[in-house]
Length: 283
Figure 1 (cartoon, rainbow, N blue to C red):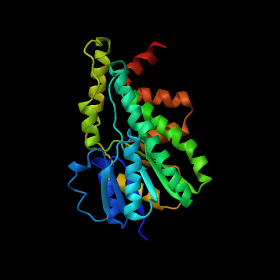
Figure 2: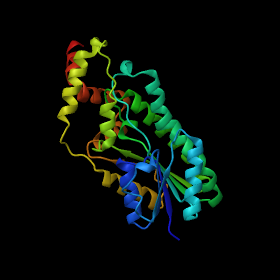
Figure 3: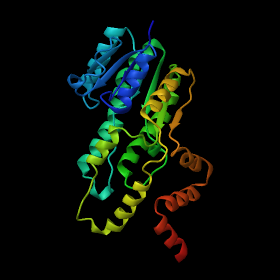
Figure 4: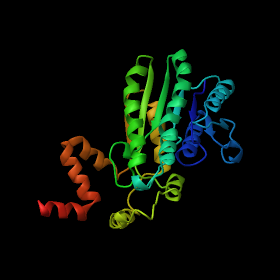
């Protein structure tokens, strides 16, 4: 019997690419999104069910799960992919945008997880994949809200894994670094800016110059992310974390290998070199 995976946020980016990848490997796919009526690329594949799911709408979550089970018989894996990245100075991010970031990235992910677990427990099997980020392990400037949401995903997933392993359910965390997709187009469009915060002008200028210098570097692709998700679902292990991205690997290694303050100082020297050098010279 073909296995079936449910993927949230499948209208673009990792979600759409992963839907195609699993379908090409012989899986049934429940590709969910908020506006399935706009989807034209996935709906022609008989192994892909395109249906509505809004992670903040529990009725739509239950409906999507039921529709998938009705069409394919069972669900073997869930990929919690729906999310977005709020960028900008913390003081510039409106409180309602902070709430939205957590409603989607954290509470929405929990909503879908809670809804699928009775089905997994009944079958005494299942794999839960939560899409986190390298920013859930290593922070950078102007990502405080997004990083906070992904740190929450990491902590939730790591703790939940203890509970679900008792039910033969695997929990996986996939941590992409920077991958050029429409995710970053939305992040750029929704970048939080407040012209009144002039005290940050120098800092903002330095950060803009720093991040522009990273353009054109070695980055993973959406296809590599999809392949890693497939590995996480099919490798048969209880491995918790899967990191993707050549620019992120040395930063995670630094975090794992150094005492905390040494790691913090290393990142400050990397992301705020001028300020760090001035501080060191003044000591």
